[in-house]
Image (cartoon, rainbow, N blue to C red):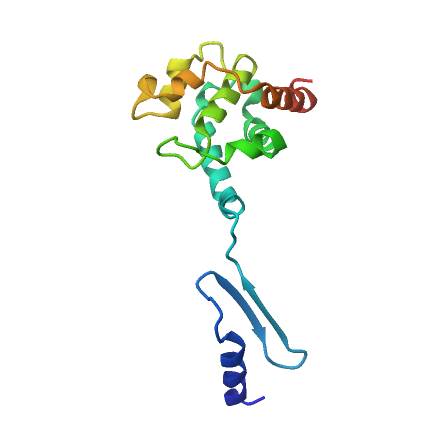
Length: 169
């Protein structure tokens, strides 16, 4: 295939394609392979979930100075598992009306509260946890209140079951 033929073929294939969010793989020699993938998705949760999960992990990672020595090595793994629980997954990626966040910070704070007595040092309380999580506002941040609340029962039971099976068993 000549370069001119390749150019014409490519022009024809890509005519009308939305290339803003696309991935194109072309191999125009023997055993030709052509694939076009429009990577746009209507599901914002799916497209942003990796970024949001990283943001959640960064957020809960701020509490590592308060994690008991016996849990520090498995702390990230513990959270990755919690974020995969169906009951958590359906709510944690929806920030609702919360400002300056891409995830449900209130739910994350409630889960922190749920496991606080076991995972965090005895001196950890809502004030100093809020200071680690939200250094700009500290104890005055609204997350402080949520650090003293438990998640809704369905989520609480799911997280408890996961923690007992994998960590506190």
